Amino acid sequence: MKRMLFQLSLVLVLVSLVIGGCAPAATAVPEAAPAAEKTVIVEVEKVITATPAPVEEKLFRIALVLPSTTKDSAFSQAMFEALMKVQEEMGKDKLEVAYSESMFKLPDAAAAIRDYATQGYNLVIGHGSQYGSTIAEIAPDFPTTAFAWGTTVNTFQSEGINNVFAYTGTSEFGGYVMGVVSAMLSKSKKIGICGPIETGDNRNYVKGVLQGVNESNLGATATAIWTGSYSDVTAMATCAQTHIQDGADVLHGMSQAATGAIAAAKENNIYWFNHQYDNSSLAPKVIVASQAYDFVPTLKDMIATINAGVYGGKVYTLTLQNGGLEIRYNKDIEIPADVMAASDALLEKVKKGEIKIPLD
Image (tube, rainbow, N blue to C red; front, side):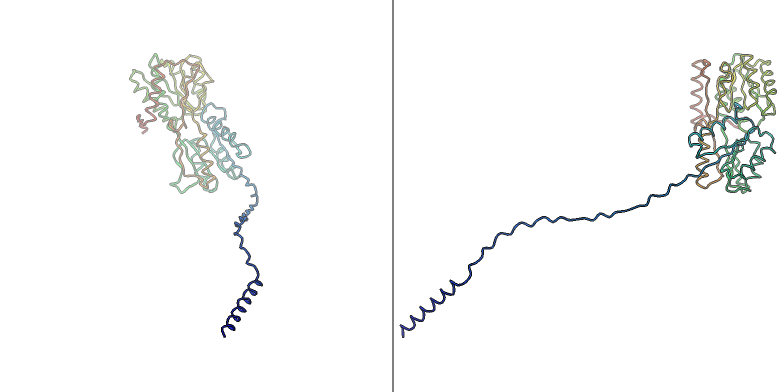
């Protein structure tokens, strides 16, 4: 019995060995290789914008109606030259300019203003205080045409008119400064003033001169004569001669007719102070200084305002502070240092608002 159990155990051992020998050999598992980096492809969105069609800037058109000529050495020339400067900056392809000069007769001026508006000009300027009633009559017929006139502060909005600009200047302050200077330069202490018509910036300038001479405290006096005409050169020459015969050795004046007075001042070697335009080239040995207008900033702002869809209702005030008015001394005349120092000091006071000049 034991023998049989031993034999059976031996057989089982042999069978297990045979089966184990026939089993496949175990395969070694290799170490995992590092994962290769993935290339990420990012699709960039392509934005394709069509080339916009060129925007053609609209031509801006300005018409100017002048009471005198473009070379009057006064109010008209100051505006005309400013308009030419603006056109030069913008380019003739962007700004068209038309003008009518010597429109001192109101019916002629009215016809010109209406004609320009009918032709579709964007801005029609009646450059003279005499054109106010004409513009007030015509402007309502052309609500999308802008009109302008000066010197004045009236845009007629109180009358329901919304397409009129106005411009004016505080000419009295330059008159004040030059009044003091003329009193300092005068030996006879007599100053004469030749004005055209007592209105607008001319009136204010003369008020400034009178106050400046009085407040110089030099014992000087000033007298104004109004000729009643912007264009009467002979009347202006007579005015100057009257002052000179009365002992005046310094004169003030303005308007296109002032050339007559300037000629008399030149003939008698009398100092001259001018308002509205720097015409020192007419008589470089006697014209001491000029208070000149610079209308360029005003014109530029009008154009921008109209392009924004506003056709009026705005008043432009030209001052010594904003550069709309400027006192220009003649470099050909040697002015004493104390006189120039006084002028500079007074200009600072004006700019600070320290000088008051009542106009009523």
